[in-house]
Length: 449
Image: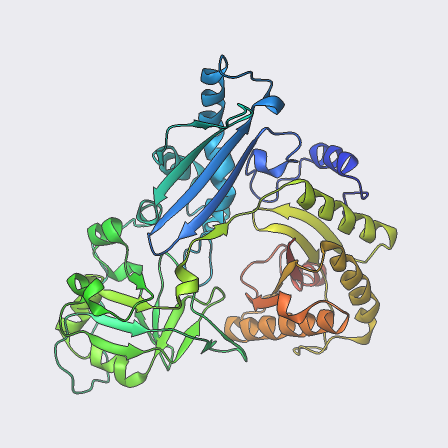
């Protein structure tokens, strides 16, 4: 078992630095204790205004800068540290149904240098001093479209072929999808509200793909994204995009790990794909998705690693050290604290946990309680890969659901637990040995204190 932390912030910080904890990506000064760094950043994503807003503050006392004489030095420090401070916030932005920006950086689909370029180009306000001259702050804003443009690589859109099955239809001027309220999650037992993302996909009820970013004219996608989100049914607010006679659709389900993709009826699907003029609507990105206002409102994004965050990390670490658990690691990542539980043993090809796991689950639940009553836990199931991706995905979701239920039965608030699965798509070891498959048969618990 790999553990750091002994219940005190000071020793935890020393152990963290010594171990060089940075998860898969070194995400800068926000990975160390707030006591060590004089600059803090708080970021929020606003889907209504289609931008990410951040506020950066420098504690002049901690930095050793005396104002007003040290004004230039303070500004230089803020400017130098801005990209590093904001990475965690940008890593947390939803890209599509399965990935956040951080996932794409880890996979090499997006480079840190490109992300830094976008951050550097953000709009900043003139710095403001507190009345006691102890802090200096400024705001930083970038458009979500600027971030999305990093993922638009092609020069021409993909043109879908006419379907084998068609239906009577007519020309429409745009597509309006009502995805408000709690909708069933395709392939799962629960329901959820649709989450906005940079590149949502559309699916038919038979899970035939209808729309994704590759179908939109690149120049359009870079300028205004591939869809527009709104919480209003007042069509005058987006008339210039979808016209006077849009196809009005009610979403039947949502799909994806990140709950981002509307699923529509077969009839509505055929009304679009059966006519070339309607397929052209997709290539021009004339799509509006209506979702719950709360999902579009400004909300904080990224991890704030303050004193309490590090204290919680130390307490969980100390609990796990006091009663060591087989094949468990506590690490840091851009997503938050992460408890990796390897070689979770289930009955073969089922989601039934073997009785020998009960003691380990007892100890894990006790450790997670150290995060406090307001903490949130996301459980992600992983399977070994044996060449059956569809079945592996469903099995991983079921296993994550069972682990969530087991933890809830041990006193973790069930309303604070989420779960998802990714099948065998993200192995941490080769699948050609029993040891490797055991390593891949794991559960990752992300903890947000």
